[in-house]
Length: 224
Image (cartoon, rainbow, N blue to C red):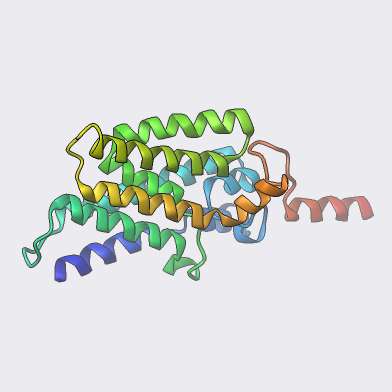
């Protein structure tokens, strides 16, 4: 059980790297969770801090999931009968939990999509590539990042299930379970977005949105 504990701890600590929060505090001196959509993800970083920091946040968040899987696949003290893929999955899931509830940021994190993408980049890169196309196409047509994330997760899950149980690809039952679990997690973490989508007031990517900080500065200058 030492192996399992080590894999979970490493994955969780990697996932707890609060990229968006730290960038906001270091670069702008603000807590990004108090601005925009109040999310720590790259989309809100883009709205509040700009595209350069958003790209940085996205890369780091994806890397968290990827390296958590890599570490999981390498750490094995020989005390448990789990394959390297199973341990990689465990590390990746721990990273997602760390991203959702980061110990370094008061257990208040993001939605885990980027960390999950990093996990899938390690475990199923081809399927992730097609899911990414679905994501980009959806965002391009609708402007909704949340909808793109959910449709990409749905496509990934369906494609993996078809490959395993219809086309008989040797991906393994663990990947099928992981795909369903990740889709369920994406839907759960986007439940507020689903409500806004149904009401027609979900934020679109690229739409001009003045942060509370900038709005306060504008009000102050107008009053002066």
